[in-house]
Image (tube, rainbow, N blue to C red; front, side, top):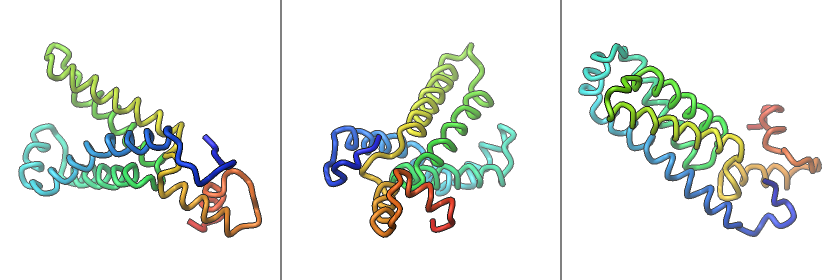
Amino acid sequence: MDYSENANVVHPMDMTLLAGRLLMAWIFLHESMALAFNFDAAVNAMAKLGVPEPLLVAVIALQLGAGLSLALGLLTRLGALSLGLFCLSTALIFHTDFASHNEMLHFEKDLAIAGGMFVLVTTGAGALSVDRFLERHILASSNDKSPRPLRRAIEKGIL
């Protein structure tokens, strides 16, 4: 989605992308904070499922970091890809008891969230994001007018 013909216009699709990013980010930000603030209980609960403490810390960091990535629209595609793969693995590892209706719902929820994340990987964050702000900033300060200034900046080590 390239709106370079009028970069100052906010399109309805960008508002929708922002709302979608915030809604998808909420579950991960909320869960990471709940795990972090109830860390001892989370360690005990995860130990019963065979999840060691260092992996729990990594999960909290992933959910918090990638959740913020989505909410802010900063490195959105990477954050969405990380969370999409996380949701797929969570579904396949923890929610495969299809005899339990509750487990089936968790399995389907994780697949649906993963699908949303993969759509976001494809579409990007939209105009209302730090990603787009940085693209515009790099484009304005550069003589190179190619359509992917953020990608170029990352490849060149600017960001």
